[in-house]
Image (cartoon, rainbow over all chains, first blue to last red):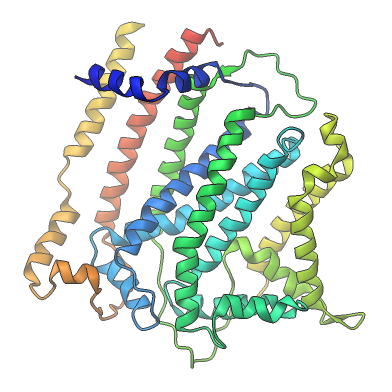
Length: 353
Length: 98
């Protein structure tokens, strides 16, 4: 019966050629091979996000009156609703963590060199999309912390000339953070960004299959490469098992909390901090002087972040040595300094009051 | 070589089967509680979530419920991991990898 079904499908779809492609495709083995698994790990958490996100939308209501109550309903009344919500929240954090490791390992291994420039660009765009998911999803529970953190977050672009006010009104949808902001965040979080990310992920994975894994510059590959199917896939499955184990352990031992319902008329509570992945921006804004050469400190930080993001996106086209298969010292230093800066600012934001 | 591997595979399958057949006490308790409270109609509840009074602690699932879920899922994952690990070794041997 099963054989008949398989042969029926094989007659109609190019299953055999796809299978042959994956059997012939090899994955290099060297001392840095372990970093290859973080891309797959990011994909795994992304899939968890889609599944748990869809389940949450069955019960969530995106209005200021009902948002908090519907989340309460999910965690208190819906069977295993608290688990689904915790998996969604923890998976988001783990996905962003795995994505950063994947991105910086690709950067330090100069994996963006010819012909993989578009692989880098699509990956960098995915980073912005993922951070957008984090930002738009944060307001949805409509609790005090989410409300006031979004209130501050939506004001960040305000210092930018020309596009500043437009950016703020685009994020808020009105003068205040209210019903328009919530429905806007919800539709971006559940419709716009998922569509964009699915397109980008498909493009990213397609290119990855086309070009294969990149061998780091200057790394010897004395060992025989692994066939992608089934050898590398089994390794990926093992790493996914470990990732799922960590995710489920975190979600069950430390379930996601929910604060009191947001009261827009109340004063902002002390110690509002964004999620850990926005702490570098938050801490940079805090550390910036009020004014530098008659320009506001916030404006300079936002400008530097905008320039930094553009440079990060264009790395494959700026690093001329990479295409020649050589490592460039300034870019290596840039990468290491950036990693150190991100870690330091995150730690400072946690330590400083 | 053959028999220990087959034995481990059977053991993994038995572990998965055992964890799947465990009675889910938390879910059963919730079901009973749900039956008692007749006010909540499941069809309308899905469309318009009821407004729930805030309990003292907003999220506090039973520790036993959390422990049970964690145990069952981790046993299943460990079983799956072992099976995949064995398959990986088999595939590596077939491909002549060290």
